[in-house]
Length: 118
Length: 114
Image (cartoon, chains in turn cyan, green):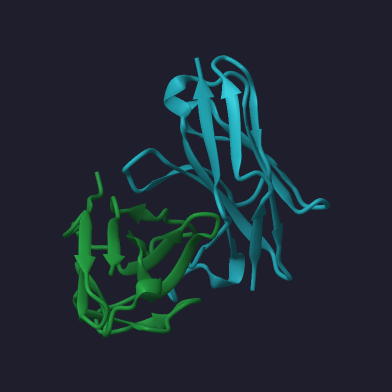
């Protein structure tokens, strides 16, 4: 089984400032890692994913995340945020062995609300 | 684009009522999921299905059941609604193709049980 901890429940940030959202996971097996974003009154959509290969992953809307296996972390960053980045962000994990025909079950963290101020 | 449609955006039901939440996807996806979203708890998996008439319990199945009679439709059933089932419910679907297939979410149904 896996678990995910998002260390910040809310992050206020000024427009054009950088932001980092922290995510730590726990797992006894190899993992795939994801960040999803939920804009107000919408469902979740995928920002980026780590499956294998380079530990620095680039996603949509200028976001990137770095997988650190030794620290079991997958922090999300953006160098300069916009008002439109105001949303809730979710880190998610699944064991590599649970991916596939039996259903790609994800375990989500508690979410981080980002409020971008002008 | 994949579309996952949840039949209701808001629902208000009384304690003890039987409640049906409906979800339809239009991309012939094999997998379908029901999550519950609560502040500070993120999303928790209630049930999922990887084929018609197949279902698997997620992490919090108590008080819920599901039905998947057709590939495109996945229903969540609250047999006897209780106030602690007041929540946002999110449906998602994904394909089984190759190594990875992302989850596609509906916009959610906010259920209030009074």
